[in-house]
Length: 119
Image 1: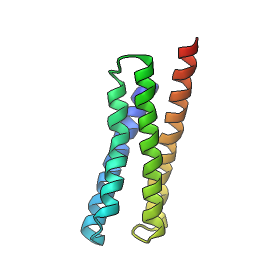
Image 2 (image 1 turned 30 degrees about the horizontal axis):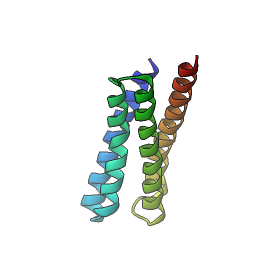
Image 3 (image 1 turned 120 degrees about the horizontal axis):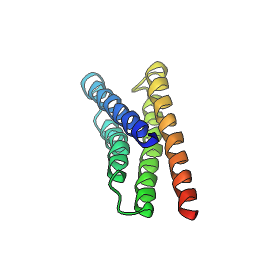
């Protein structure tokens, strides 16, 4: 069940990221940072989906940790977009909260998977 929630939340987050990038490119004419946030923000869900058919528990953990790294990188790009004025606080607040939620869920998933592997 948790993986399904993680999949759906990461997919919805990827859609939000793509819409943010469309805004940045169309309205702000910003292409470099937007490409970075698009790459990392959409990779979160892609790695989670890959984990669905992982070959082993270790492979599952590895793919979830990749998602965790991508989520952390996405927070960096979102912070940079905010601090350079490409997005305002109102725009940043909601999407950054979604990213924090994904980070927390991924940390929990990795910890649980590691714990279950040791048992």
